[in-house]
Length: 136
Image (cartoon, rainbow, N blue to C red; front, top):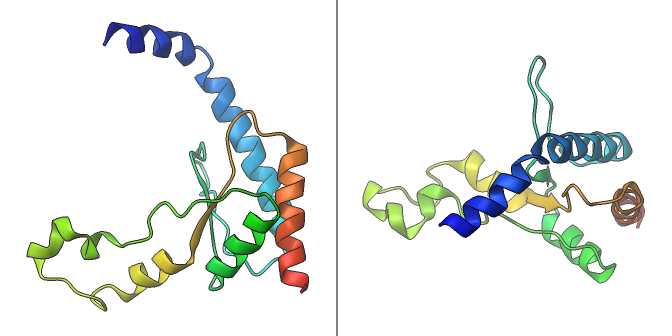
């Protein structure tokens, strides 16, 4: 509607700055978590990634998520059920085991906080909690 269009028109002026900030924060996450057991999002050469989400992977995702929650770090699991196991796709005939890699990844992915207003101090705090988790 016109109201939302007006709001988005104003927000659009800030999009490049917000995307740049997301990229900076993602770089900081990757730097601080580089020597952990986590699988981190990559950055292909000759491309740009604005990191709408910063998704990590780990086999003990649920334990890590709970540990972070207890320390006040909000995380999300954006895609807990693979597409081929969604009710909307039942008619395709796929079942558990049809796509084992997809199913594995769906059990391991975890999105860390990432938004333009997030401070570098907050990223350090999140990463510190993750490092504490691995040092137990």
